[in-house]
Length: 156
Image 1 (cartoon, rainbow, N blue to C red):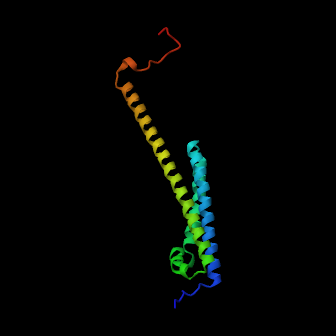
Image 2 (image 1 turned 45 degrees about the vertical axis):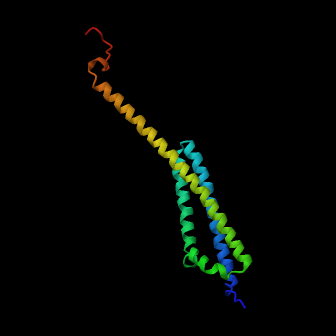
Image 3 (image 1 turned 120 degrees about the horizontal axis):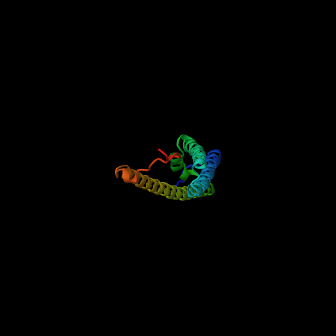
């Protein structure tokens, strides 16, 4: 004689599934923004990149709000999943798995973007250092390399 855990009422099942599906959609939006970000970094379009980062911040804020649903969506899921009907549990788990997959892909793109920006920063710093060394070399080499002023009146 086994006793099954009491079922979570259908309203909570529907609400939980709705929240998890919205979370998945926000994760999908984040992935799309990350893909656009990659293109902007490749194109060195930093003005639009800043605007896109603001959009990503809004999506992250929505995800954080959803995370607080039910007093903490992760804790609620852990406590409620065994009480859900099999169909509802399956749909919720699918939404969670999809969201996690989307986030993983998004994080991989974020890492690539960070590496690309870091490489460009390092290249720029290196080039600025070279320019600084070249200009210091000119200044310290005496009058031989110092540009001479040119006058229109050569008579004196």
